[in-house]
Image 1 (tube, rainbow, N blue to C red):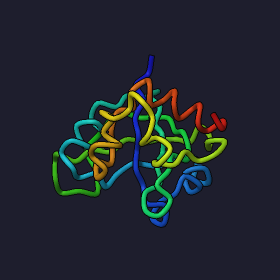
Image 2 (cartoon, helix red, strand yellow):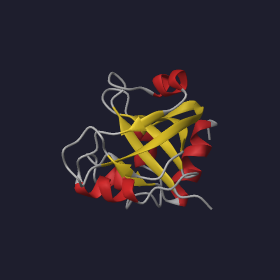
Image 3 (tube, rainbow, N blue to C red):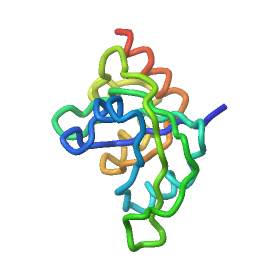
Image 4 (cartoon, rainbow, N blue to C red):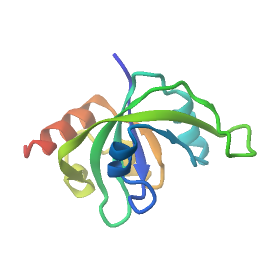
Length: 137
């Protein structure tokens, strides 16, 4: 089974709608050491939730990793890597951070514990909760 990830983006910089329009993008600009570890663990076929930061603070779409991690061509730092992603679909409705905060079993998830982390794994319970909430559950 593919791994599942969450990628954060400021929608004024690059929104999920931009990914839908572009059809594919290189996920770059990650500098945090922990986020880079997660990015290095990604494999083609893994799924990723796209999360809009800023005033929206919600999961808005699903993407798929299409490349193995490789050195970031735009960075002078050999530790930095990038992956390519493509859109799968927008969520039926965005799932706000506040809706996730109160759910049992998610308190240990990095999204709720380390709000500045930009790339993180998504535990199965969180994936299931987001899928339920997007349908209005």
